[in-house]
Image (cartoon, rainbow, N blue to C red; front, side, top):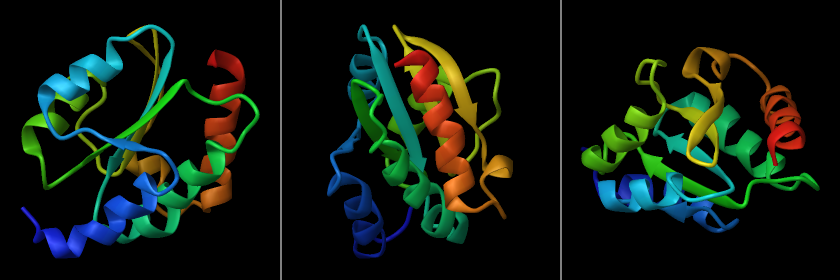
Length: 136
């Protein structure tokens, strides 16, 4: 667990643009199981989350076609909520940061940490936009 004062600005970066923070397994279940599309960002304190993942997610949701709901869980903080979100992302191994798109409760697109590290935020955003255009 990280000190809350450390992660607060990282949380705020996503919540300020409309991401709903999920802090319990029940909130994760409720969000992912709903009809429509749900975009989940597994947030993290690492540098690739700051430089690549969060900026990419923020850019992608500005697309004309975008998910019905955008949510986030924070790795290293609300462990049970993160574990529940990751259970929906199987067979992909746990990864943070990570991004997943669900449609009607089914995983339809996944971006793992190894697809985020070392890639420009715009490249990741373009990948997400393509998924949003296809599924949203």
